[in-house]
Amino acid sequence: MNLTQLTAVEIGKKIKTKEIGVVEATEAYISRIEKLDKDYNCFVTVDKEGALKQAEEVQKLIDAGKLTSPLAGVPVAIKDNMCIDGMLTTCSSKILNNFVPTYTATAVEKLQSAGAVIIGKTNMDEFAMGSTTETSYYGETKNPWDVTRVPGGSSGGSAAAVAAEEVPYALGSDTGGSIRQPASFCGVTGIKPTYGRVSRYGLIAYGSSLDQIGPLAKDVTDCAAILEEISSHDKKDSTSAERSDNDFTSALKDDVKGMKIGIPRDYFLKGIDSEVKDKVLAAAKTLEEKGAIVEEFDLNMVEYAIPAYYIIASAEASSNLERFDGVKYGYRTETFTDLHNMYKKTRSEGFGAEVKRRIMLGSFVLSSGYYDAYYVKALKAKALIKQEFDKAFEKYDVILGPVAPTTALKLGESLSDPIKMYLGDIYTVSVNLAGIPGISLPCGYDKNGLPVGLQLLGQTFDEKKIIRAAYAFECTKSYRRPDALTERGL
Amino acid sequence: MVITDETIEYVGILAKLELSGEEKEQAKKDMTNMLEYVGKLNELDTDGVEAMSHAFPISNVFREDEVTNGDDRENLLKNAPDKKDGCYRVPKTFD
Image (cartoon, rainbow over all chains, first blue to last red; front, side, top):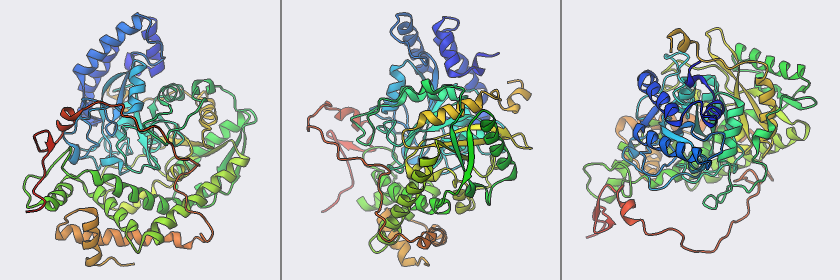
């Protein structure tokens, strides 16, 4: 087996036992990116020189016994909305086409101090607004399972890079499903942690009350190990939580005996592909056979999550994206008549269509006369959605369902009808509104050979329960790499 | 609700976006569709429900107002599209 087919934790072990060197591992991935990324476009920036330099330094620290993390020496890619000191950070937007941050996001800094080697920045939907990675200014990312299909989004570059084995793991961010849905489309595993588990400092904000950074990797073990490293209370993010239960790898137990799992009936009523439905319910059966107590229940409010989400997320986006004005950083229009004209032209030329659409919707729902009717109404719906989850978690340890109604869509299919694209987020957005954790992992393959994702949700700060359930399920099967890679001899 | 030309003009001012004629027409259509769709929330009885901004209680986080970072002016200005004498340079705002 090639080095690049290993999981992050497996590579970490081999580095620790000196079976492989950090430079060797880094070079293996970089040469794979050089060979494959012209087909997939997972990366906006590849920092070959920087990565090799880091690799040498990390190797020295490992040799000196100063780095002991399971991820020490393991290469990683970072979604291009997390700032890294001295590395181009674009948010896949033209408006940040030349932005080089002077500081590093806390989650990334945590990985760096654990000895991670940062290989580059991954492609995404512009400002994380989209579910396909097609709204990127730097071109769409393609799904390694089938290059005529989208990788999902917005963390599509991160998910596709892991699936294509261009990197063993990556960080993504999830505002309405942006880690879980691309993980599902690309056949990898991803966690959206509880809001506040991971510091958002240095994450370029989209919907601040919803955004959360999390891992994408080949399996649950990797995701638990990564989450363990990046979780922290951070003075620089006042919404980050002080927790003493960040030891997620302790939850990697193949044991779900007596675990209560609820399946929302409402998730399977309409709009879901029958193959997705079958695979997800088969996964529930598997967990039941392993001793979990599985039952169906009514989770109300499901159909209100998308309207509430798009009002709240757009409102926050319109406010967060005001800072892009052509003064302090990023793109500035070339010709203008006065200050206001400069702002307007800069923003109109710098933002893509989907970003403008959301900024306008957000500006409208926050405007005087409409604030109560739309924005406050959505915040009330959010309270009701949270109540429904609270009720469910009084009875169940874990909620089980699909990640998305379908497997990966064809490129270009979603862009013409925004509302249709938004409807694909039905199983993911409520999780961000409620602030709870969710994990997405492959549970089967459809007739086109595309991966189907299983989503497990837990109560606030109950990541360990979903990790345990996911791990127990994963123990019944082995990781399947994209058939297309094997067929092409890659 | 149908979005009029005036509303799009107004939203353009709020959002600081300059739209072409074609973009305005598209925006009118998109926003009308979207508002019709999110209008679904009106089915919900939310009387007596408190608007929730954060999903779980977070109280104010206070700290002493102490400067911990140094002067980073030169670095920060590296990203400026235009600068002069250690400051950001912008078009003239008044005569």
